[in-house]
Each structure stands twice: as structure tokens, then as C-alpha cells.
Length: 126
Ligand SMILES: [Zn+2]
Image 1 (tube, rainbow, N blue to C red):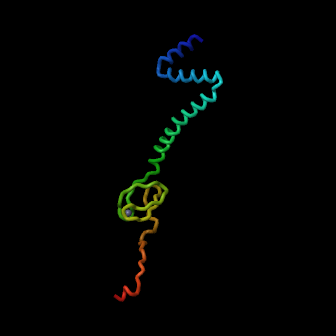
Image 2: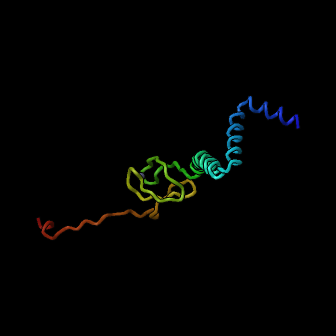
Image 3: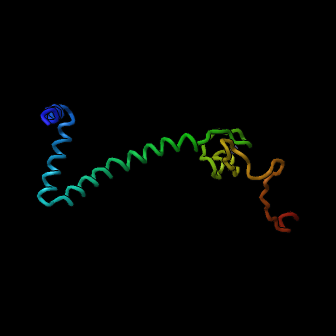
């Protein structure tokens, strides 16, 4: 019992002391009957600290696995896209599907997309 008390005293002198003080204040409030207030406050602090760090770690894990940097198969322009999505080449406007770390054309090779232009008969006569 005496050993535990000296350990607690030593902990108070170190950096953990601040945390222990907060914990003791929390226990005091809990014994008074304001436990709900302390719990709410602690949960709020935990949420404020945990949520951004988890989101940050998740993003750091997710981003390198899904960010793909490759060249456009049509014009060789290098840009980045997310894996498993469809995007358009910012240089030539070719629709591109990002699959397994590579950029692929949505249209099969050999097919050229042509926009039809309507020409009136009078223009041809002139
Ligand atoms: Zn392109």
C-alpha cells in the first residue's frame, strides 16, 4: 500500500501528473454527483482528439493506395487520378478510366470520336 502511494507521488511530479490531477478532479466531481458532466466533457475531448487523428491516419493510408499518377494513353500528358474512377484528361479531354494503377481509354483502341457538324445545303452551294 505504501509503495503505491510513493508511485502516485512520483507520477505527479512527472508529465503524467497533470493528467492525474484532471482524473482526480473528475473523480471528485463524480463522487459529488456531477459524473454526467465529467463523462460528457471527457467524451467531448476524446471525440475532438480522436476523430481528426483517425481521419488523418485513414487518409494517409488510403491516399497512396488510390492516387494514381500516369500518362494519358492518347496524348501522354501526365496527371493524377483516383483508382477505380473515371475522369477526363485535362489536356485532350479524352475520357479515361483508372484501373489497377493505369489509365485506360474508355473507348476501345482504333476508334476516333468525331463530333458531327450539321451543314446546311445553302452553305455547300456557295
Ligand atoms: Zn490526353
